Length: 231
Ligand SMILES: C[S@@+](CC[C@H](N)C(=O)[O-])C[C@H]1O[C@@H](n2cnc3c(N)ncnc32)[C@H](O)[C@@H]1O
Image 1 (tube, rainbow, N blue to C red):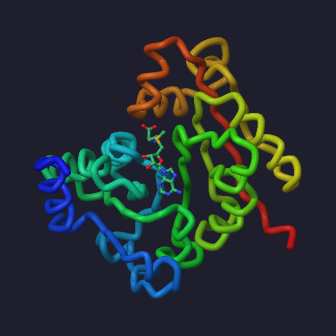
Image 2 (cartoon, helix red, strand yellow):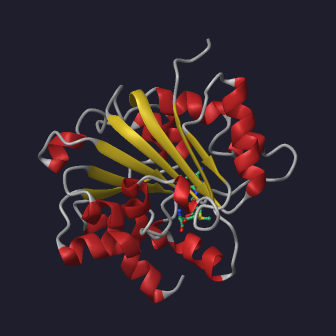
């Protein structure tokens, strides 16, 4: 393993704003984290999660843009997460944290109604047959999210993948959820469908998003609220 990577992993362990629970805690639901996040942030502000945050620049950007909210980036890859975690450390950002775990385990780390909002940013579309269950908008994941988000929580998905966007819209239809906003060319012909607040928010770009935009790829954006489970 590269020397830098080892140093970054060591540093992650020292950052008070980085949480790296064991797989056991995730699988067995044995974590002491649920219900503690607002104490960690030392305020009662609403909590937004970015699922699959990669290098975490979106989590950090949102934390800077909305000082009255708290943001937690979730990803399994520590080497990527280190980038955002380091920025939080160096810049002394108090309303951002990182949780290193599989998204499948997130309900082991948050209590009921502890999370106010989710962002799914440029998730892997998992296009191969048999990989449906790994798409972050699969009903299995929606059921996981329902365990810890407030009723009516906003879920935002941004993706370069028209395949994933169309799949997500199919799932929402099946679940009886009417999306609040669906656009397939966020920064192009659909731009003027956004409110001024949305436009301000969209100044923030993720690492992958910027790469796709540089190549001229259109970005899909879907916003919806989770309903009660049908079961
Ligand atoms: C394509 S990258 C996008 C990263 C970032 N959101 C961006 O837009 O730049 C997808 C990220 O999701 C993470 N990821 C994918 N599946 C995951 C899972 N089941 N649990 C945790 N992280 C996952 C990967 O490690 C990767 O960092």
